[in-house]
Length: 417
Length: 141
Image 1 (tube, one colour):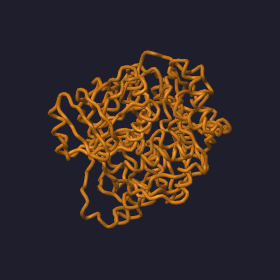
Image 2 (cartoon, rainbow over the protein chains, first blue to last red):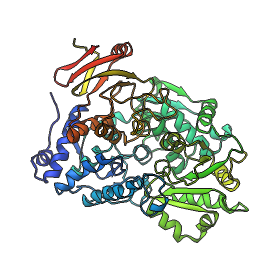
Image 3 (tube, rainbow over the protein chains, first blue to last red):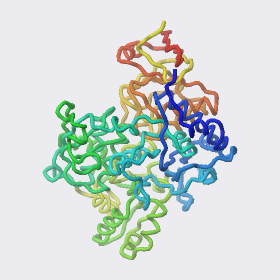
Image 4 (tube, chains in turn red, purple):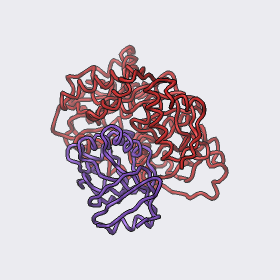
């Protein structure tokens, strides 16, 4: 008994007025909307597709149906990371068959009109969603960033739904598209960062990791986060979306829907449950994410999960500049082709290449096996890398500050604190 | 036996041994597509086989790619046969719809209320018939 109401454009999409591919996509969205209890559809301004990451023949089977039906996206659509860096195919240490399969999958998406940005951080591009705009973004870290930091409205989209949304320009009006679902339902108190003595990298990664687990099923509002950069919030959101399913958080005074505690909670702050994250919780998370011992040999340093911003490259350049010698192990930084081009244009960042940094584009080192050295652990400053790396790549991984990663790269082993 | 403790999200029929998880799992990065086992080292049921099971978990988490992981597992014949969740997960819902559309693999998804969870916890094997028009029947084997 569906209560889903159609506007004329939705009827037109279903009836094939916009082509057979759009009709097929709309039928899938209709079914999806019914399951989620939607009462109507809304138009989106953009889509970000995660289904362009090759998982196997099913990835291609799904997209090819739409290409065979001469489909075309109806809104600006960007692509998330791929399974392999096709600019440097020689770096790929996994099954070589995946390189051609990935090329084919990316090309099929391009035939539908998607822009091959191949980045998990579309919010670092020049054009970004505006506050209040409906978008259909997939990729867990991009979802939480779009909702929380940009104030755009996206539900937790996954593969397939994202492409159907792009092909129709419509999504069921459910979840985080609805303003009433965006108010905080949980107050979160956190340790003061200055007083905690934790460096920013570790503080935000560990805080995100704990928050993701404690806020399952909730929209949390952090009441006392203090100051944070966009990169800090990116790290926090990415870790929280990995350890939990966090799609939206607020931070009073920092994020666009939290000018005040009252506005973030719709005036319900007095009655909401409170979670107090302690310094002990953050240290426990760090212990879990960094099981490495000091002086343990490392195979590589992997940064850029989510994709490095230009500010992060500048921070890294300062750190490597302070070292007397270059890296003795592999050092990879993942980012988009667009940001890589900017890095290569800037003479103040040339020291990165002298140090031994290799820039991986299109993909990310926690999912694409790039590290050549097979023995030794991997150091990262990303909570997300430290969470997924051990399962995906069967490697020992340690979360540490960017600064300690750099010193470890020079030593070839886990540097002292 | 009709059980009000369950609500069908995606319909279908399935039976198999119950794989009961005590923590949410992201199928992408959490399900090994070669072995069908849980590969997330931080998960309490790390190593548990999910292939051919009636998977019951308190929720999904993490990756947008979990729908792809589910469909690819279905294509390879190593997916769970049904999934019980305590919270609606739109990503797994779409995965199930696509598995049926592309490969004719029925993979019912059912929302379990708290009292339904007790039934799931006490069963080794289950047969489930989920239909979104007539509710869910769950039979212990």
